[in-house]
Length: 376
Image 1 (cartoon, rainbow, N blue to C red):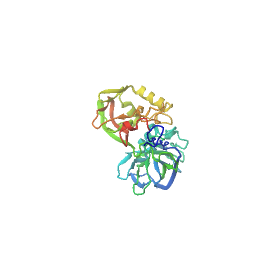
Image 2 (image 1 turned 45 degrees about the horizontal axis):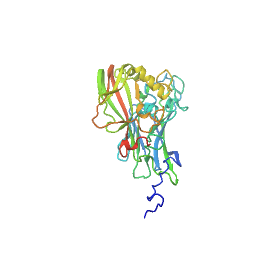
Image 3 (image 1 turned 45 degrees about the vertical axis):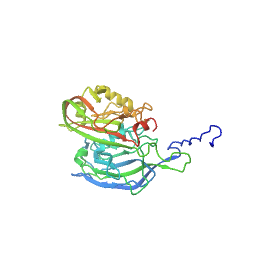
Image 4 (image 1 turned 90 degrees about the horizontal axis):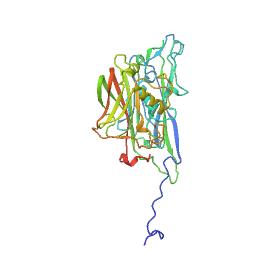
C-alpha cells in the first residue's frame, strides 16, 4: 500500500532554497604584491594563484604608481594608464584561458560594458586618478580592474575553488613605458600591483542549494584580431561560436595613427550585424552610441572620460538585457545561442585602414542552454 493515505502517492521532495540563501561574500588579500618599473621591454611579473575558498566570483587588480620630482609635461598614451598591463590572462588548471589574453585597456572595456557592477566604469571610481602635465607627480596613476568569473550576482558562473590541486592562475605582463606614455615622466616610478580574491562562503544553511545555479557553467572572455580592414567589408565573427554569446564588443584602431580616436572615424557608418542571413542590427554610429549611452547611463559628451563612451568602442549589449533594463542582471533568456560554423557577420564600409578587435563573452553551460534559460 502507498505511504501517503491522502493521495496514494509518495510526496515530492522539498525544493531547495536558492544558492544565495545564507551565502556570504568574501573579499580578501592573499598577500600578493609586486613592484615593477616599466622600461624599454615588457616584463612578466609573478603569477597569482587564488587561495582555495568555496566559490570564486572574480579577482580585483589594484594598480598604483606614484612619481616624484617630475619636470616633463607628461602625456598618457591613448589607452593609458590601463595598458600598463600589456597582457592579462586568467586561466584554469589546464592552462585554458577563461579571461584574455588581452591588455589592461581591453579588460577596462570589459569592466565598463560587461554588466557586472552598478558603477562599472573604472574611471568613475572615487579612487581613480591619472596625473598628466608638468607637476611633480606627473605620470602617477591609481586604478582598480576586475577580472570577472561569475556571470550574475546570484552565483551563476562562480567556480568551485576548494582544492589546492585544481588551481586557477592569473598571469600579467607590465608594458613598456613608451606604450603607457606619449611623454613619460622625468623619472619612471614602479607600478605596484596587488590582487584581491572575490568569492562566496557557503555556510551550513539547511534547506538551501549547496552549489550555484548550473554549477560548473563557465563564462569566457576572448579576443580576436582582424587586420587591414578598409572599404566595404563582410567580417566573419568567429569568436564565441558554438556557445551562447552573452556580449560582443568591437574595438577599432586606425592603422596609421594607431589610435582609437581615429578608429572611431574609420568605423563603418552605418553598420550591420547579420546572423545566419538575418540582419538583426543595422544602425548608424550615432544611434549605436546613443543606445550605449542610454543602456549604461554614460552621459558625458567627451569620450574616454569618466561616465563617457570610449572612442572606437561599440558594444552589443542586448544579449545580456532581459530581466530588467540594465545590462548584466539577466536571466539568460537573451543569449545568442550559436553553433560552430554559423554565419555571423559584421558588414559595413571602413573609412580608413583599420585594425579591429572583436571581444566576445560566451558561456559554456552545464547541460543545454535551454535548461538554464530563466533559471539563473
